[in-house]
Length: 381
Ligand SMILES: Cc1ncc(COP(=O)(O)O)c(C=O)c1O
Image (cartoon, rainbow, N blue to C red; front, side, top):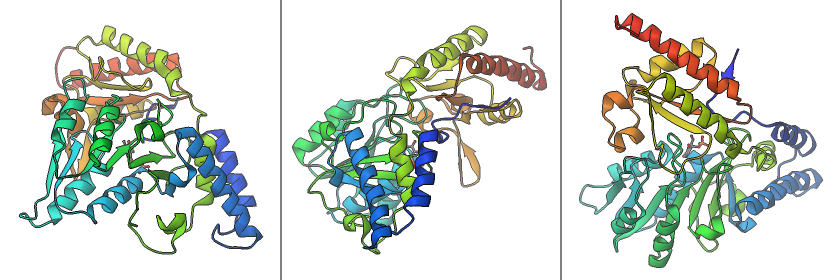
């Protein structure tokens, strides 16, 4: 039996999204930039989706720039700010997704060492939450950009973005909020946060892959990453992916991730009963209801993932592949978890099709994998 428990990686498209995509692809197949009837029909689909997204995240429809996903949204915002400002400080957290960390690190690495750029990566506490105070204290007079995620993709820990956003607003410092893992799982209010930029992605909420949005505060100029035909009001060139945009809008609000709390909690409860040394990461933090990041000491995360895969479970391991070698999760390392423990983690992220039976079966599978692995290592189970 196949059990998909990796919804933070991607959430299979919901029926509403598939229907909307098919309809847009077949009935609105013109180019939205064309002035004739076929173009106007496609334009209508894009405009309706823009309105729907704007309503859902509480922003003006003019703030919505459709992109190919969270990675592109983050890159556009970062490039737009950093390519046009004087050298100075960039403040972010040590637990951002690589779609934020990599462009920032790469940008700074490419500047002359004496140019005056500095990248501050604020570490979280032991529960996986970055202190708002520490972020605020890191914002200096010469800070050019602040980047902070709303929800961490590995632990599900909600980050205190609001006070940091208020401080940045007061100081006139541009701020990018990566809300990719927050959409559909908690409150995402662009107007309320009052930041310059916010990144969103379609496939984390049951929409299609390869579509997302960058929300841009009114009056903030966006410098294009890939200049071209001037679509999206000159802010993101390239013919719009009309079916994907329609699917993204149709998926908004369909999945109630909060409803996964009983399944996630049952999984963690049973896991701790069966494997008492299991550690639930960010257990004491405010977390999204579908996410469970667990450390099982002595068990390699990747091996667990592969063994579970053989049993039909799809989960994620807390390690990432970088330059061909496996590295422990930068999120866990930033939390102060030792390398060996960090490598012994798996992330389970439940979704709309997950059941109590999945939770129970996964615990049973983990117990059996643990027995097998310990047996192979010649240790008593
Ligand atoms: C927090 C966060 N930001 C950005 C991304 C990248 O989004 P996309 O896959 O749409 O490029 C992800 C994807 O996992 C994410 O979890």
